[in-house]
View: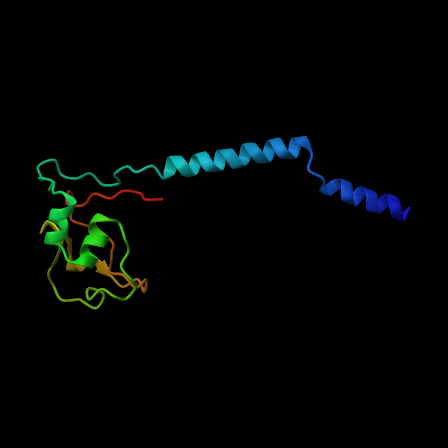
Length: 133
């Protein structure tokens, strides 16, 4: 009797064709949904009357500091707590370092404890973002 109980428990752990098919379908659906959700598409629409800057990489490297170039043009992330804007709470407007366009007002900023400046809103029409995963 003990051997039949042991045999039954090992059989329940075996992968059947049905398990394989359902697992494959579920995994494929999950991967497809991630791919669909991660396609680069704008979340916010840029105002059509704003002129986009079209410079080559050499020109951008001349215009921007090395860290700013990496963040703004190569989609790198600056180190946490490295931005002087974390502790900046004076009234004013946050300006893009590349194009001098106003992006955020001081009252749109909040403390998130994330290590990066955080904003709950932006100046509409001045920001265009893409999903990068």
